[in-house]
Amino acid sequence: MSTNDNQFPSNFIRQIIADDLSNNKNNGKVVTRFPPEPNGYLHIGHAKSICLNFGIAIENNGVCNLRFDDTNPEKESVEYMESIKRDVQWLGFTWNELCHASDYFEPLYNYAVQLIGQGQAYIDSLSAEQIRAYRGTLTEPGKESPDRNRSVAENLDLFKRMRAGEFADGQYVLRAKIDMASPNINMRDPAIYRIRRVHHQRTGNEWCIYPMYDYTHCISDAIEGITHSLCTLEFEDHRPLYDWVLDQLQTPCHPQQIEFARLQLEYTIVSKRKLNQLVTEKHVKGWDDPRMPTIAGLRRAGFTPKAIRDFCERIGLTKQNSWIEMGVLDYCIREDLNENALRVMAVLQPLRVVISNYPETQVEQLEISNHPQRHELGKRQVPFSKVILIEQDDFAQLPPPKYKRLVVGGEVRLRGSYVIRCNEAIKDTDGNVIGLHCSYDPETLGKNPEGRKVKGVIHWVCEQQSYPAEVRLYHSLFKVPQPDNEENFLDALNSDSLEVLTNCRVEASLADAKAENRYQFERTGYFCLDAEDSTDGKLVFNRTVTLREGWVKD
RNA sequence: UGGGUCGUCGCCAAGCGGUAAGGCACGGGGUUUUGAUCUCCGCAUACCAAGGUUCGAAUCCUUGCGACCCAGCCA
Image (cartoon, rainbow, N blue to C red):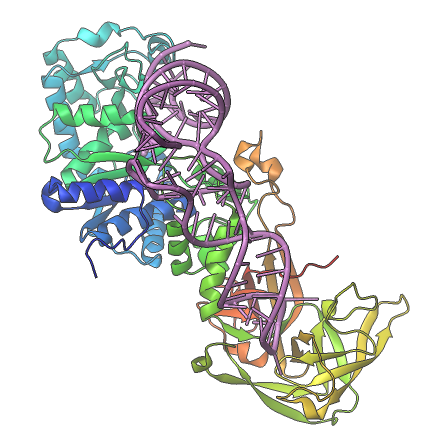
């Protein structure tokens, strides 16, 4: 086994790191960080970044910090911080250090004093609107603020007084003195500190000035000894500013910022602002609604950390803006659940079947495998008796071509049980089928009948010894592949994304299902117990994903 | 009209001057007491376009074309 064997698929960041390592850059160390702002729940797009940052560290015997980019307290909260920690851990990652940009407020302040002392930052009294007007446009250079040449001493004094709370919010701002004519707008004297009297979830009322992202992020990275600062494409033209700040200051190191394309998944959205709107305006039941692309939502829907990690690896990593089809995520969760979920039977829309030639009071306990391939997962007992329930869809008065389920006069195998023949359909006055009279072949338990082949196999539960359950089927949240591109994304919401079935019956073994357990309801999909709404007296299951459809009606 | 970035199969994506990996999706065959799984086969004479360099170009050069991002005291 050669050490050059590629353990992981190649991507441009892995290549950069491999090169750095071979050049002994950073003394051969790899330190990354996952730096969310605690202003919402993490979503599948964050999972991509988490898997990248933690994965890169693990692969290279490095470490990864979890850092909260908490420099804008207005939108941030402890609830969000807690949910982020929970989600990262649930995904299976362990951070090296738990950090906060707010841990660095004091050093950040001191670095700013240094910048002012070097004549590279100044206090501006222009209003926000004036600053915007002075900034110029994409094609025209900006003009310098009248305050740009304020003396160092005056800047130092004003900055100190800003911190001391002598000025009103918005009265002054600290700006980096770079180049108002730069073709890169981010370099036209960006604001790096603003006055804002907001209570901070960690520092309370200690500060009334807060540093801006561009100034904070690079210094935070440097303080933590980050070697590779991985972020998304929209920060590409912030990199010159990232580098400028570190070039002016004597920081412990100068991390390399590398940008990659953020995840875009079809039929959903990964904008925190819009996800927040869905929650706030109650288009969904919360951040952990199973229809949400949040980690919490995916978790509640029954996704596994492994499937999500696998997804993040499969979609690749590039600088190309791309849209991933939902089918890839579906594939990943099915692959995991197919291998690991126990098989059970549940009838979602029951049709009553009386087996005429079966003894009136008899109940048989049939032994059925928990998994068709993995016999080590054992067997369970499933009761069978004279009255059973099957899926309404598994009987047809007028069967479509190639239908292999039950029809009057036809036979079908009851999964793990006998072959039955349908003798008669019972109808109500409107002609709706409300029940079937069938007969069973006692010779067909565990073996095929002689002289004829029975193609169809359907699932069932015993009417008496089964449990009622509510089953929630989830459909895509949006009707169009790219709701983000709509004029108003809410118009693209799928009003039928939640389908609640309340007359379902599940087999007896599901009575003590646990929220972490994942099941395949044979022939219908993968399900898990809802962690929130299931109670001792009420079973509620969420459909994680359907089985792959190899046959479509009509 | 400024700056930055990106164009390889329906969707992702390897490829780094030596003659188009792989995955998802899709189509077809086989196995199957889940129309699932598994398995086998098929699926870009072609890499945004046009020129050029070269024995040889998706890879290098030139010129076009298209897409995305940037004018918060958000991150």
